[in-house]
Image 1 (spheres, rainbow, N blue to C red):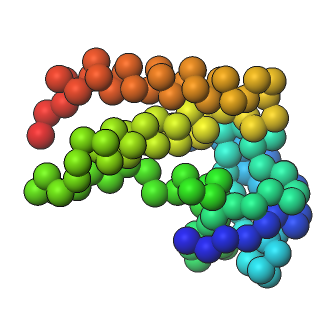
Image 2 (spheres, rainbow, N blue to C red):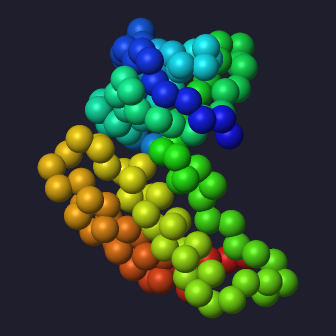
Length: 137
């Protein structure tokens, strides 16, 4: 993942589409390190000029696709194999996963953003606990 600031962001043409994750907004984005491409978001106000982001850029037949994340929230939850972590580390990883889920679902400019992140993260943890028994491997 690379780190950069957004220097330009505008709705793409077309500005949105409905896909596997519902309505997605599409943006033409330029970063301060010279990389540019298209990024998708669940809300129209998720990203703005001046925001620092971690990103990956992938070249496709449709052009460069950018995956943007807030710094520190790009990894997702990756459980260790072989029981290599202690309980506190595992709890921290699960909490980070829940916060990442919440941050992806919310608009950073929404009122009470911090409290909403906590509320949504708790909902993600609750859903994880309830659904864990339904997982088939």
